[in-house]
Image (tube, rainbow, N blue to C red; front, top):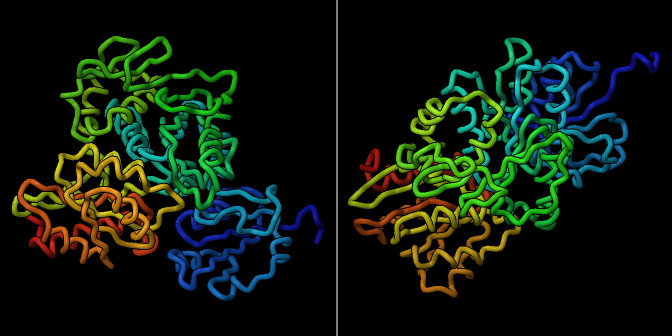
Length: 458
């Protein structure tokens, strides 16, 4: 066969939703013809059956893949990694590596019409809320918008659908550090880094490296939104970028979006009254500021945004009440997968919280949780890093109970709680030691509440 017409050999590592979207993209995008191989070290990967339905793809799972010799990677011209696979896990050169975010960014610039905008959202906490709220505000104003990426539908799956059926006027993409580490030139019309705190240090090594990956989202963005409350490294933005700053603190000349006397203000002028917003927006005012800054390039009327802020219901598993029994409120904040998110939920709650936490800590420092000791009646911890959390709380007066599963956690909480208490699942950790994901953890909590307190928890 002539080398000029030979098909490229491509490898996908990780047979989950992202890996499946990559395989479909490479097979159906009309890009360079290729031979595909997909691998996963799990014996039964979550999307294995869907992979088997793809035409002409070679699959290796479990022991079959784990016994590969390092030199076997040399036969592939492109190697796409799923978010859960670190670049250091693969014995190959960096030039061969790609992922869903990298492929999406390149394809967007080729396929998307000039009338469509791409907004990119990242940060340690609040990504999903801002992504969902940004799309909600645009749709409320009659502008077609979709939220994709980490928040739900894989971005490449959405891209193929848009290519066939038409692009939205705005695509809002939620991006993790795992995706950005192989997409350093991710193109966007507007981008925001909401915040950066300890997370995924087991993979990225240091807070400095983790932050640098997050801030790379600004490198190829036309506009950037900056949180002025953060102590941030120098931002290397493109020359055309304009900084729309946000801060809940006292305004100054460098800040556009602020909160003053019960109003969200733009450059000191009141725009949106906090009391008129939905509880989901009132609970996350800084995230609302970021969303409004992202939305500045669209012709959204004040009336449309006001209506959107009033109707936004928030996200599942983000401070969501799932039951009430004998005067005790049960709240699912399973999406709080790091210390900062859990601490926010604890400090925002009324005093007398029975806190449920634990899981895989990802190298985090748990000591900040002690700041919420005055909020806690008790702590109930479980999972891989339960002992580490217990050790932190041992320096406080908070009683701490270690349990083996969610059912025991809820049972213990019910025994401790009295009328007026809140039982808060806000784990501060990844769920993957005990659950498929944070959603499954939240569902398990709701089921345990229903079982302990009666159907519906009422």
